[in-house]
Image (tube, rainbow, N blue to C red):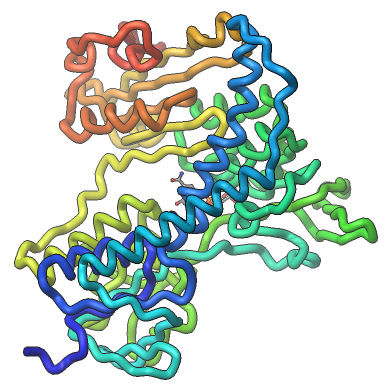
Length: 452
Ligand code: NDP
C-alpha cells in the first residue's frame, strides 16, 4: 500500500486528463481528478463539440438553398438562433453527465475545485491537501488576445459559442482553425462576416493551394477576407456596436468582434515554479516524449504542453501515460502523419506533408491534383469546387501528403490517413478501386502529376 492518498492525481478534466485517469482507474490505480469548470474541458464544453453542433445547425441554410434545384419548394427558411443555442446547451449538459458517469464507472474520484501543485507529490484544491505518487497536469489552453486599447470589448471562442442572438455583423480577427470555423458558422447562419488577417492568407502552415482554395470558397459564400491588416484599437459606441480602428488608418463598424488569435497553455497559477516544473516560451510545460516534466513525479499531456494541440493527441498522450505507469506497457505517442480537419465552410482535411514541406524534404516530388464541381452542385447550381491533392515522394512513390477542401473532407481524409500511416505508394492508391459516384474516388483516380 502506498503512503499517498492517490496513485495518480490529475489536474484538469478535459480530454487528456479524463482519458488518462479513466485508463489508470481501469488498471486498478487509485485516481483523483480535479476540475474547476465543466467536466469535459475545452473540446467537449467550449470547443470541438459545441462548435461542430453550430456548424451543423448553420449549414442547413445551404441545404435549403440546394434543395430548390432538386425540385423542392422550401418556404423561406429562418434560423431561430436561440433555439439552436438551447439545443446545443442541452446536448452539452447530457455529455457532461456522461463524463461524470464514465469517471465514476472507472472509479476515478472527482474533486471539484481549482488544483494547485504544492509539492512534488502534493496538490491543494480549495485549501485541502491531497498527496499522490504521480501528478498529471492536463489543464489545456486558453484564448490569447493581444493587448490593444479596447480589447475588453472583444469576445473569444468561449463567448462566441454562447451568443444569445445572432449578430448582424461579425468581425473575426485571425484566420487559423477557430477564425475560419466561426466565419463559416456566422456566414451560413446569415450574419455579415469579415475576417481580418495580419498575414496574406488563412490557415498558416497548411498547404498553400489548400489555403488559397479555402479563401476563395469562403469569399464565394460572402465572407469578406481582408489581408495584411491589424486592429489598432476598438471603441464601443453608445448604441452598443463597435468601431475597429485599423493600422491602414481606416475603420469599420461591427456588432461583435471575435478574436481567434491563438491559444496559450493554461499553466498559470498551478504552482509550477515553486515545485520546479520547467516551462518554455508562452508558458508551455516542457515534457519529454513520455510526457515527463522536469520533476520526476509530475507529468503533463495535451495543450498545456503546446505540441500538437488536438484532442485525439491529448487523449493518446493521456492513455499512453496510464499504460506506462499502471500497466507496465511503456508507450510513446507516434506523432507522424496526424490527420487534422478544419470545420470551415467548406471543410478542410489534411494529413502528412504539405507540398512545400515535401519539396524541402525530398529530392523530387510529384503532385497530383483534382479540382472539380461536385455532382450535387450540378443540379443545385451552387458555384463550388472541391480540391484534392496528393503529394508523392518521387524516389519511393510513397504518398507523403493528402489534402482536401470540400464537403466531407474530414470524413474522407480520415480514411486516407490510414493509407499514409501504412506508407502506401501512389501505385497502391491507383490499384484501389474507386467508389462511384463519389468525390472520394478522385483520390484513387489521379493519373498524371501536375507540372512542376
Ligand atoms: P491558430 O494559431 O490556428 O491561428 C491564429 C490566427 O490568429 C492566425 O491567423 C494568426 O495569424 C492570427 N494572429 C495571431 N496573433 C495575432 C495578432 N496579435 N493579431 C492579429 N492576428 C493574430 O489559433 P486559433 O485560435 O485559431 O486556434 C488555436 C488552436 O486550437 C489551433 O492551433 C488548434 O490546435 C486548435 N483547434 C483545433 C480545431 C480543429 O481541430 N478543428 C478547431 C479549433 C481549434 P498568422 O497566420 O499571421 O500567424
